[in-house]
Image 1 (cartoon, helix red, strand yellow):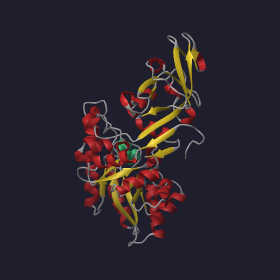
Image 2 (tube, helix red, strand yellow):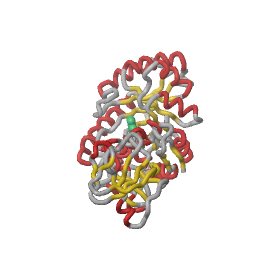
Image 3 (cartoon, protein in one colour):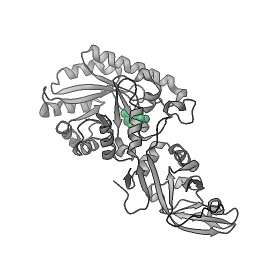
Image 4 (cartoon, rainbow, N blue to C red):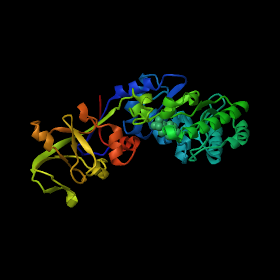
Length: 380
Ligand SMILES: *Cc1c(COP(=O)(O)O)cnc(C)c1O
């Protein structure tokens, strides 16, 4: 699912992702690789392969369709569908493709019982992960549901709960860690109740921020997402050192297609929103909001050209964006048509971090990766 015909290129450093996996695999418990949404835009299959080589044996995607795609690529590990089955195609795919769905409501559970009765046996059961809501309030059963769950599951022979899961809402917000600890306490009570009822489940609760900051919430499995792609959830906080070793894996470039002077007082791009404060030189870069480079970056963001920051001048257009390269031109570092500009990453002090780009964009690194990752990718 790439945006074709454009000039923007996404470069993914698989070694950085492998390094990040090792960083997130220290301590107790098994680190699951969260590769949903095309591995946060980094490319599902290449990322999953690299992580399998690094020892990852459990992969988490969103939809069952993504899980099937991953299985058909040759992935032999455990594959979790975090969303679980939604339609009949999803239910039908689970047993043949050995996909472990998260199950968070009674309708799903009843349909899974029927699916297991038809497609699975006690020797080769349909494995599921019971999903609990401990505070996120999106999906999941509650602690109070455990007795009924146990009774529904006692007469479901082909169905085998192998995991219990929940998701933290505030693990990356130090001011809100008390809420994460409360979720942790509720989750522990859920695990105790399930195990008391005879279910031998692997608990998993922590996301990247939970892995880095909350050792007591690790349990048997931990689900690492954003940290694999090199973002430190604590960047800019007093806890920054927790994720300081993580390395961004995505760089994004586009070529300069024209360089020209712009006399003092003249404007560039739609709406004439940027006027040259002095005699300037502008470079026109072949990228825009059609490549998922947000129009919200107009007059706010910067790119990195030959190691130097160059600010966006005027509005980001559909496939073109102007940057002010006056300082570079004056310092004798001529800017040429064909130069590659970094929208993300780059070398030297002008390098653009995912956190900065997200900040200018008015969003979080997750969304920046998912959107820019829709473009054609190259691997290093
Ligand atoms: C996306 C996701 C994760 C990964 O979270 P990060 O903050 O990216 O580490 C973990 N668990 C669930 C259920 C998710 O949906």
